[in-house]
Amino acid sequence: MTRDDAMDLVRSVMREVAPEADLGAVGRDETLQEALDMDSIDFLNFVIGLHDRTGLEIPERDYPQLATLDGCIDYLSSRT
Amino acid sequence: MGQFKMPSLGADMESGTLTRWLVGPGDQVHRGDVVAVVDTEKSTLEVEVFETGVVDRLLVAEGAEVPVGTPLAVIGAAVGGPVPPAPPAPAPPAPAAAAPAPPAAAPPAPAAAGVAIGPAIPTSTRPALVASPMVRRLAGRLGVDLALVRGSAPGGRITRHDVEAAAGRPPGAPARPFIRSSPRARRLAAERGLDLAAVAGTGPGGAVTVLDVECAGPAAPPPAPAVPAGTGPAVAATQLTGAASQMTGATTRTTGAAPAAGPVEDRQAAMRRAIGALMARSKREVPHYYLSTTADMGPAADWLTRTNLDRPVASRLIMPALLLKAVARAVATVPEMNGSMVDGSFVPAPAVHLGVAISLRGGGLIAPAIHDADRLALGDLMGALRDLVSRARAGRLRSSEMSDPTITVTNLGDLGVESVFGVIYPPQVALVGFGRVAERPWAENGMLGVRPCTTVTLSADHRASDGHRGGLFLTQIAELLRKPEEL
Image 1: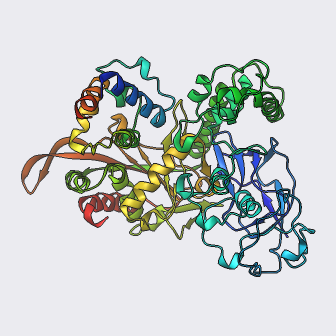
Image 2: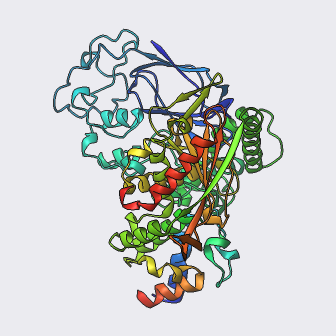
């Protein structure tokens, strides 16, 4: 998956999880949970959404790598 | 003959707007069926009926705002008790079978004059399906066996689309389909003259969100030339005008002389007022006392990590599920935390319906219940929590979830808050708060260590209990959290 595809994927999953969230206003290295006011259920739903689209198992110990937009893109583009 | 009334969906509710009927005269309803959709100041709720029978007539039109307790419909007695099994394989009805069904299908109905439900599914063999009466009626009309239909809505509920798909018929053909949508999205759509049916929903369960409506742009210009079905936006545009005027009509009726202010702001202001009124009442009437303790979350955190190693993503647990379960279980030790104040005296509740404070995006909060939370296995509780949160945010809660929490939990830990002393939701008598789970110094058996800890707080009603019992309750919660494998 290219970095652009990864970005699109993150954007589309985030629209499902937090429809009102404005991903465009979030810096690439900002913490998503804080910037978008996501609680732990939102974050879990986000991970489930990424899993559903990519088939990646995404173990819990990898969660910190998904904390920022850049982190998500690195993670997804290097594994799919 | 009974009346179906506008229910009280929380102590802060004075009136509700009946936004949609899901049944009509002649429909058979069963206790627990969702029969109507009601907007309150705080949210949109699916309202369940509490008796079994046949809808005789509807007393309130869609769009009307009426006070709590107003009769909405008359429910007649069930047709002659248990309905005799219909012939095993009813022939598919003729195309124009929307008309009253042959009277021979059922014994003469006393109340519902001549309107029996068509070749309906025989009650005796009716499996416990999750489908609204409207969907069941549609299935009867189309000759679809609901037992063979897979529900696509949360909780496996069968929607109109599922039935139509099973009948091999293009969905959404006649009538107005029921569109999942958030209240704010609906108002925005009405304001912009958009038909919700034309907006692709990206929210939970395909719900149409504010963003979807915004992305759908302004109302399209006059009907486009005929377009082949299935081409999305263009088709939508042709349907637009009629539905839009319907929606605007409803909105105007609802709000009376609609002010120029945006509906979204209206909703926000209304919710703020409703929360304010209830909390002011609580602070005025309920003699709160407050306690707090620090719970060692080490065992729970370790257990969670180990457990989730073996679980696929979708069935992983998160800490809030453990916290909720611990509270629900602790009630068994101190039952005077679980129940309600009725005319100044405490009435304990026979079950634990755990209210969960859920913050809504864009502001406000709502605290619907997870029913029988003390008896749910952790995985089921987790599923119920995810379902509840997504439905709360999409405006798809059910009336029973709003009307009967027996104790409430608020968890502000995710936001980094260290501790929260909440305001009790009348008529409940206790509210448990959790702060952030963070590493802190912890002394035990003369040894100092670092452990993940959280501050657990209790706000309780002094008319129902006092500090000693409250303290026991908090201690019990902390104890239960030290043995997560037993939760």
